[in-house]
Structure formats: structure tokens, C-alpha cells
Image (cartoon, rainbow, N blue to C red):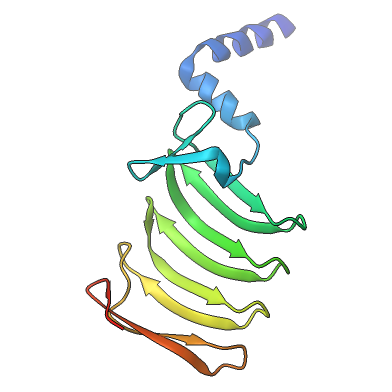
Amino acid sequence: MKFFLILIFTISLSTSSYGNWLKDMFKSTITSQELVERDKKYYTKEDSELYSGKVEDKHKNGKPSFVGQYKNGIKVGEFISYFENGQIQKKENYLLGTQEGKVEEFNDDGSLRTSYVMKDGKYPDGPIKFMDKEGFVEDIIIYKNNILVK
């Protein structure tokens, strides 16, 4: 039985698809500084392969500053940025590498700063309001056809 398991393990290492699967299984989380972007895809600097897995950066105090997920070199799912105090700074979603869906930005006390919906990587037409910590409008920007008008 042990011989059989060792044989399968050895064969899986020599077969590229199984070898990559095994490599991914033992892969730890990397930082964004370990990635390089080429043609809108992300590769590892170390071996120049399309990256699949989790990326996490940390502040000097050890708390997360950024967390995201990549699949075959493209951003997928939720990406979150954090303030040094641990509060969420920004949440955004990616579908097949394109920003898609609700984007939320927060103040460092956790209060909502702004919220809008991206469609196919484009900003919505119209105003986007930015609120201060007390909930008052601090700034307004306006997009038209994905171009900042004001």
C-alpha cells in the first residue's frame, strides 16, 4: 500500500497538471509586491507563471492592508483594503478581471464614505457623493460615459 501511494505521488509530480495542482495545494499566501502585471494579467515575479491564489499585504503593525484573490492571473471576487486601525477602507468586486458590482469606501471610523456600482469596469453616469464622518456631503464627482466631468 505504501509503495502504491509513493508511486502515485511520484507520478503526480512528474505530470504537469497534477504537479501544478500539488504546487497550488502547498502554496502560501503571497504579497502584491510578489506579482507583476502584464497585459492585464498578474504573474509571479519568482517563476513568471500566471498566479492563482490569495494575496495579502500587511501594515507595519501587522494588520492586513489589502486582501484579494486571483485565478489564472486575473482578479476574481472581493478585494478589500484596510486602514491601519483595522477598519475597512474599500470593498470592490471583480468578475473575470473586470471591476463589477458594488464598490464601497469607508472613513477610518467605519462610516460609509461613498457607494456606487461598477458595470463592466465603468463608473456609473451621474453624481457620486462622498460623505464625511458625520454623514454630510463632503464632495461630489460626476461621470459621463466613464469620463470624470466634475
